[in-house]
Image (cartoon, rainbow, N blue to C red):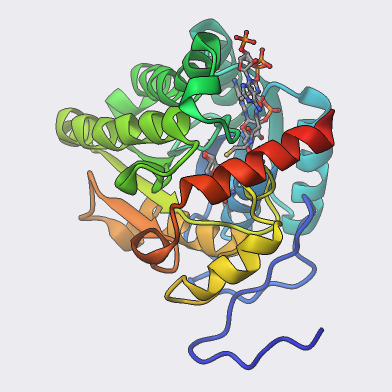
Length: 301
Ligand code: NAP
Ligand code: COA
């Protein structure tokens, strides 16, 4: 299909799979993060993987950390091959502070410093509140909210408290208008936005900035697939987004790079909404969402 002519600036390169870009044009100085170290939870897939790649293309070494070590190892090889920088894959569960502490110790042993923490790990699925189990709600809160606190606290105590640093939390706009079938993730991310401000206030004097990026629908991701981004309704939905399209992972990585770098040296406690204006105008129709959810459930049976 021929892409319709777009107005406005060109969209940066991206690909839909968990692979590295085949070409990349720098917007920022290629040395922006030279010899810094970033610890990225959920860095083995989706938005987190692209953040790792873009950071590495700006001179940064990375640790990518999550539960699935095989996938992380594969991703780390691709990332190092594409950028020439070091990437260490480490296994952790953000719900288990001891596993985070072990991964941060290993990072400091191997790379000697830590400059940036990206809290990107999350879990989500579509589910109406009256079908959501108590444990389903709790699980998402534990991964998204407690996981963000656990990782931030471990990194702060082990390094940022005495050296300063930068935290960027990957949030979402789901809670802004009470997005249907998203009470669990919307609640979790709203709490994270509050946490961003609380920690910015408390840790600013230690030289730690804490900010968030709140993506809208981002193509080529698990989040996009799980939340109905590939459905026929989604095509029509894009027309209701002010910028008329889904975002891509490279765009999210550029926003994260801005907040994690000296480009934003006087910014803390802020939430950068990067959704093409979507939360203000997109439909939030419960009957459409329930229809999509039940058809997906039937298909999975
Ligand atoms: P994704 O590829 O599934 O990323 C989530 C990552 O979190 C995975 O790499 C997963 O790795 C890791 N993870 C999950 N549970 C974990 C745990 N308990 N401990 C450690 N790591 C864990 O999905 P994505 O769509 O790129 O999402 C990335 C971030 O963007 C999330 O914070 C999401 O809420 C946010 N976001 C995405 C969209 C979108 O359209 N995609 C929109 C708004 C916000 P393992 O399975 O190896 O643990
Ligand atoms: N709909 C409703 N409830 C669901 C669900 C779904 N699609 N998927 C899981 N749950 C419930 C389970 O039924 C369980 O509750 P129960 O014990 O009352 O039955 C609870 O959530 C925990 O599920 P479990 O599979 O044990 O959790 P987990 O810790 O292994 O996995 C998830 C966490 C559920 C969030 C899983 O989807 C995941 O690992 N996601 C990571 C990737 C992702 O979500 N990417 C998108 C990011 S936006």
